[in-house]
Length: 291
Image (tube, rainbow, N blue to C red; front, side, top):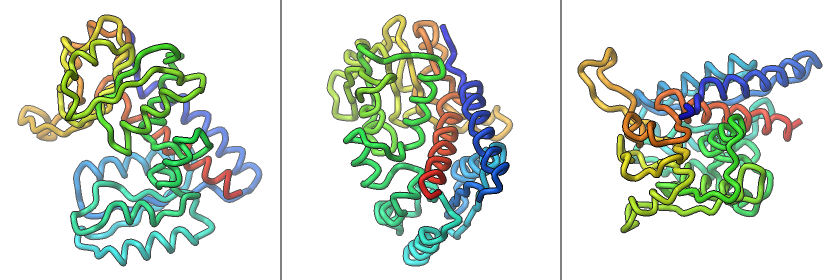
């Protein structure tokens, strides 16, 4: 059983990015710049954004963190996004989700200019992805594809099952795995909350991607021997025995599924780290397009 270690794969990607940014510095050109907007004090969001800022610093990408209180009004937020859209020194903009209930998430996503949409959530980015055009790929699916590439796992001819149909992970993941590319060409089935025979379909999967946000949902009886299991789940579960009072759990019951799998991603230490690698690659791509 191969552990698909996100730390190793992301380190290799970050090393290449670091070299590319170093060349930019050597040429005395403007350094790539990512702007992140964080609203409120959600613990998970704080952790994610801090990690993104830290990783930018490690590869030499400049980053700005813009904070708003949780009661910020939508107009103020949209005005800030427009200011960043018109700032020639900003290459990428991300607004950390989820947003407070009084803010329309879709309006915020659409407010980010498509050329700075490093999260890949804008409808224009999504449309280009569907049509196989160059675009910003949502960071988590992009990170998963980068992981498959790093470990030379080729989905061609395999049956891939994706559990979850979100615009952030499930749907773009299904498009990437079925695309006519070196690390695509799989036959893809998408499952969701209304799939009646979910376990039966999962048992057919050569590649199983779990992205539904339910800790430990995928059990051993849902995975066939020799499957490749990609766990996208990252949920904080209360645990009084843990130092922080919680543990991070994936959507896959790792201990019982791992012995059956040919390869599996751990949580933490798997897809989460690759998501940040995908975001960094998108930011450099945005910079290159602006240049």
